Image: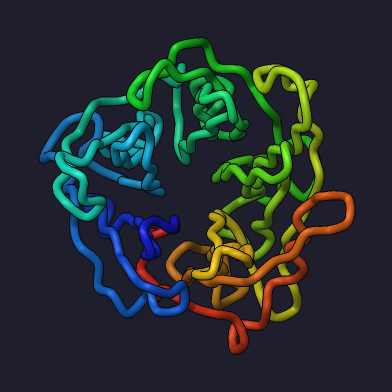
Length: 296
């Protein structure tokens, strides 16, 4: 979810082949908008199936959506980008190709520094076989082009990152007062133990893994809420409050079909770090989006 021009926009995939965008004046009512289909996968090719985790970005005055896709075979998942034909974020988009990630890739997002330098961050395999997902970063020449080799930002080396499978995925950028945070999802997304970890960067070269410090888990399950993960961040309508958007599971059973999306206000600690607290019980949290299988 992002905020732009007085509206909240929520980007999602449906039925593995379509990308929709919902729009609302408030966070809580985004689920009341049925959404507009802005792009559908072609009948064949490398981006014809398994459309996952699309992200809407406004870069250099143009609208882009980054998404993961394959040809029906998971080992061929790569990051792709589509660009809006006009200025309407809910208008027609055209595919501009895949990004060179050096192998299997999902969950791409963009980090823009204060000096306008831009980087792509995503989840990828260290080799050619499934079994572990790391977070990678690479410089971008423009919104369509990765201009350097990938650098491993972090690996799932903590116990809370390794439930069911060692996974770091779903990176999201959060910036405040010169600090850069990459909040990411850890462990198997199909498990109740899916949670959020965080990388913190204060100074130095963002392409140097040594300049990032890992913390976590910073948001995790409770006795009443399970499988919290793959977040995004927005400001309140008055632009004074910070909100985290995330999905959770409605049962302790493993699987993806029981996820829906929630929103929660969060605060900042005295040391300048985000404090997400605990996920609210499902009956108390703001639930802006009705369940859509594989939407987040």
